[in-house]
Length: 278
Image 1 (cartoon, rainbow, N blue to C red):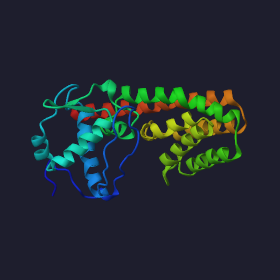
Image 2 (cartoon, rainbow, N blue to C red):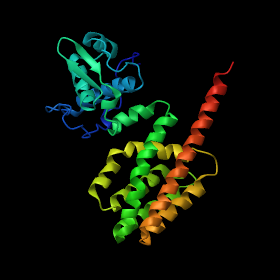
Image 3 (cartoon, rainbow, N blue to C red):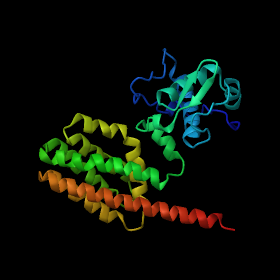
Image 4 (cartoon, rainbow, N blue to C red):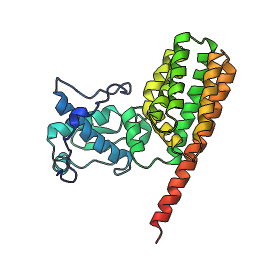
């Protein structure tokens, strides 16, 4: 049995160590030929600390407990703690000062487009404000991407969008990976835009897209057919080479999807309030 606070090594070989997404001017976490198993221990420890930081356990600017306390709490070596801190520093969450210690950076410096940092935010109960911010980002990018894709629809990219939509239709009743099909649909449109910078945003906000999709499909009952129809309208506009129609249909889809998420969050909060009532 794992002691409270101890970093478990069970299943570590199956964990994916995220690479890249390092803000300019900040050093990447060091590798130095460290075996994969050890790197995964460092990554898992960084994940535990990262979740605690974004959850507000440590206030902005506050000092983290000294190294000895942290090593004792998590039952890890100083090397493991140092490497975990290197990962968190690369993500903009902490910084160290000689003879002072390690402090939490201001939230404005956190790399929110790092998939792991986003996942740490969303591992906690997603707030309407945070999800709303993610949808604003999507509303800024995806309608424009749909219009670009429709302006010069290539057969191969249109086929990829069509295949993703067909999978959504096939999985709409839960028999397969609906979330994966939805994600592929939107990622294919970003790539079909023909703009490398727009397409790159898909990779940066992949985690955000997956979480918002998951919440969208968990909204009010009976909503899937309506959203599937809207996805089809986006696809048809791109296929038909109608940029403005594609832009409008994608904007409408996102607008209604945030409504789905807000309804789900409202129901979740009401259920939590009822459960907490005496």
